[in-house]
Length: 225
Image (cartoon, rainbow, N blue to C red):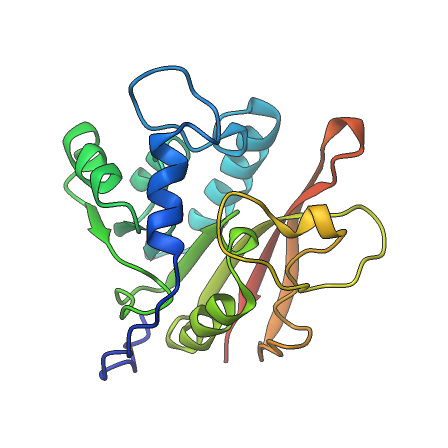
């Protein structure tokens, strides 16, 4: 496991992400008709979730020694709960305090830990591998850049993003919140400008085409230097 090299606390910036995410859950902007938290169809639709779980299980079980995983933007944990047993330790992170409180009460495993962090400004937990599942697509370029700079502390980074089908101009900026770059016919590409993330290897693990021309859900594995 790589040791974190982020010993100095980041200076907090006035990004509105925390309030925006709290409002999304409070107002059920991602759906859900119960009093519980709901992280949207991307975390519950079987056509999206099942292939992802299968690919991640295959990756995680390919190691002789189980990995320590840091799940950034764990949401309602409908997906992460299916991966915990395949890890040495699973640290699940989200920016919404009440969501983390609910997750701690609902999901309890000896190797599972929940933390409430703003991943753009706070130090990240030490781990072998980071998971970001449809998280960066909701964030401004400034926040994505801040997060991407921290990836060098990990050996593997697995990113899932909702992307347009076919050619598109990557990384058009947005204001952090409910929406994503798809409305601008754009999506996140960490290797392109303005991020230029340096990696040793890039490998697409999964691509799921959504119905009605709503783009692709693409999962990519990056092996870091």
